[in-house]
Amino acid sequence: MLPALTFTRRRIPARQLIAAGSAVALVIAAMVTMLLASPSTTSDPASSSRPLTQRLAASTWALAVPTAWLAAPLPEVRVGDSVDLIAVRQGDRPLALPIAADLHIMATDERSVVFEVDEESATAIATARASGLLIVPLLRSAR
Image 1 (cartoon, helix red, strand yellow):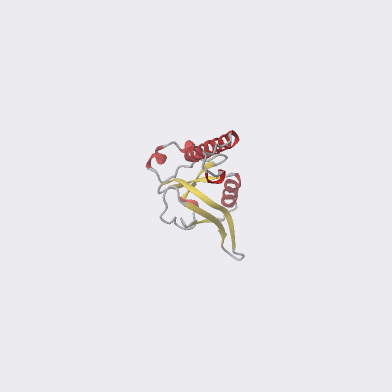
Image 2 (cartoon, helix red, strand yellow):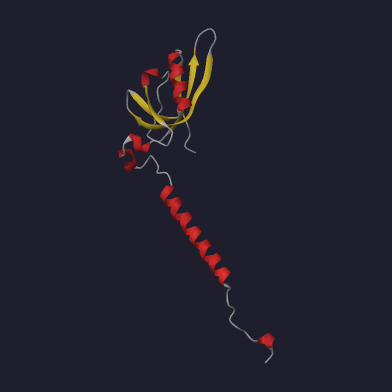
């Protein structure tokens, strides 16, 4: 029989086996890490039962803004919705300034709204209120 017509079982080199095994292990580790580290949605009933301090992201604070500070009523908002805030001044020289963007609502009731804010947003909201500017909330689209 001719050597070209014989079929032998090809042996896979040890280096290729080690490389393939480590690649599979890395993919599995990445999938497990992605599942464990994925942020929980705030619309879950279990997440709203957690304390507010556990629901805050790193380097953020909870800021309660009384609804009396708002120049317009809040639209229908729920925990987890995003809101932008602009400050307006009426009079001879009207002014509109964006003061905070993409604030997440942590809690709400008829008297106040609790936002998750960073340092810049908290300072901007407090400065706008201290300057006598009116604060207008704008609900962001969920898309």
